[in-house]
Length: 127
Length: 127
Image (cartoon, rainbow over the protein chains, first blue to last red):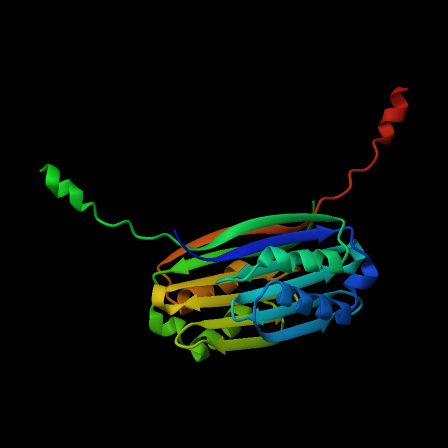
């Protein structure tokens, strides 16, 4: 496989509703995570929903981080898609600590595509 | 499990490099996908990398769509995270067709958190 990036798919819960509904807190947590993850921010969108919930998407030179919160459930979803030299685990640790999640499920997926197998030229030697 | 969203994690390859390096084409494909997926756009970021590659992040009322392209490999990654009533498969079909991927791998992940199991009050009846 030609591996081009690492994607951490994170579901986190048992977090305080107040933090999950605070767009300024989430902005600061996300920026701190970007610094800790050693990646470069291109664009940031923070959106507060009514009556509750926040979505934050950070477009990175190394792909993206997205956060979606459901304060009413104490739940938030995080995606960290990093290509190149970033440290997604460090960024995630900052987010988990900042948003005070007591429970977290992390799935790690390698992103990329199957490499074409080279023709086995050695087969000619056996003919 | 309290299911709050569906996330399609897509790796697509054997796509024309020219399309994968065209930010205007990707913008149009993404907007068409958003329409087909019946979701609501909040914010859109399209970024062209040098010497090649495009990243597009669409922040949605229903979560997000992200696209990252590697024209030099004919590869692109797509994430469609939809909560609510959207149709992520229809959005994906538009993107696959628009970007002319010949191969595609799709992983579907349910996003949410484990529900607390209720206490089994029936146990009192057996005492």
